[in-house]
Length: 199
Image (cartoon, rainbow, N blue to C red; front, side, top):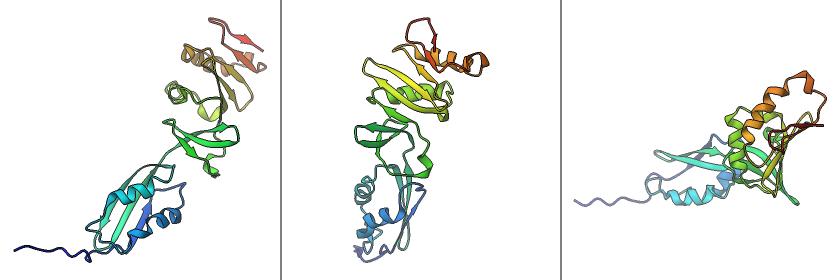
């Protein structure tokens, strides 16, 4: 016997979105509205992929079919770690260095600003995390064309880093940062090898 599967069985009636903290559920559902009335059995995941990938904040997603007529989509969002300012435009920058369309959100009001080109930011940020640098104490990052970074802290202290071997320097800064003898200095200039110039 040959069985014919009718496309009218297991009709999609309900789409559930979960795990999204930043993205608006209604906006995602609007993009997926065309799936309603189609067969759950013959669901084309490429349609869902192209609809969801329109949202910059989406890192990945999982689809679960719940018979007889529901799709559950679990969204995994990118995590912004800085706000990148490029002339008139603002973007979020994810931990992986992706640019994400900027939208006001209270979760991200206190992110550090990123100025200059984004060269090596992904690696630089990873290095900061690896040495447990207190990211939440950073007000802004400034990248200079010659290939080095400045870090401005929330207390207005500025760390001027050289192009190379900045990890040892940042570890040194963490050691002296809590020392009262250094409280009155605002600029910690490490650009000259084996020297710290204080201002």
